[in-house]
Image (cartoon, rainbow, N blue to C red; front, side, top):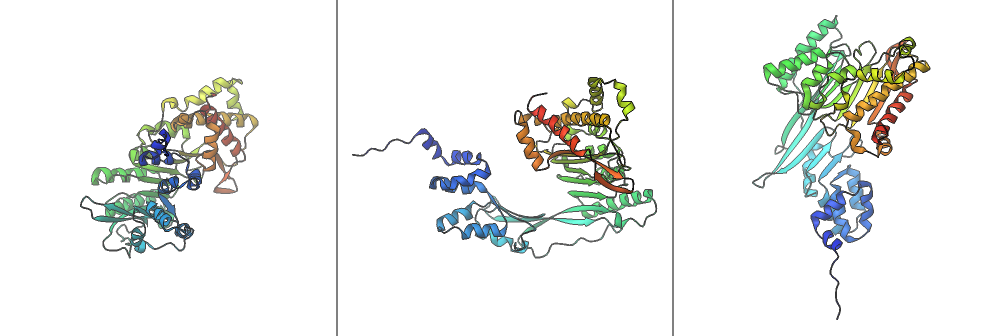
Length: 436
């Protein structure tokens, strides 16, 4: 008579699908594939945890390598999201995406560049398909110019259009003065957004000398007079870091998703990071994900630095006061994990050893600011490892830029840039490791 031993506690836990899925989902993705060859019990839950697959070629390779029909079906049933990239030259056109839902029974979403198709099962059991795309529009003097509609989308699919609005110098360069350009841009901007009846989700300004006041006044007018609010995921790309930038950022507030201020030269970079930092209401930016800023930096002369009589503590304390109450300033967004700061120095800036040490002190304080702002204390005792990952992905950094006198309006990386970035990152690591 043979007896079978009762399953262990671990085996009983593993036999519960919901718990098994949680365990596998907590295994790093790069290591999950190793579990496929452990046993049959691992195969299906591991494949199911993948959720998405990228590229038509990847799908074909995956299925062609699979000789088992049973396993092939598990692969097909596991795919929830399909992602196609521009580099996939053989990817199907959106008009043919609907057929993929028959191939992959549990497929929910297809993404390609700025297009996407979703499947949703309604309460009555009917499947509803929604195609979303982003239309890129450039502001012109004719604000009622029609936009091009997507063609080839099956009639049973609901089509939802979002748009990216760009203000380009090319369309307004014939105007004689900056005042004339700003007035014309403001008027055309209001009329174009009114024409759409909704806010753009991407907004790009490629004219460095247009004041952010022009943009702010147009968006504020549309909000107050027309009831058109900034889109829920508003992505702002500007060329001007001026005194009205904080007003514009605070106006968009919780809807701001990406903020990029790419300063093109020293002249039109009016404000410092400390000025901008103190005036932005970071606690209201609940949706921001990426923050890339170009701010003015005027280094002190040796004479100004030597006023401190080599008292580094007094020097550091004075620098800290420039940032206000930064210790209690944290961004409310849990997804803000990219912070790049470009410091725009006067043309041909050369720093003496005394000036360089002062600038290092300055960026170390910015390190304290960023540590609090991004709530990096949650990575306590893992500073070096986390910062290596962030550095690899270019998520947190400082760069110093300037123009050459003989090449105005062309920013180059300053020779002391890497030293400042090193001091900045070292300070953040110190804080994360609890050594400061």
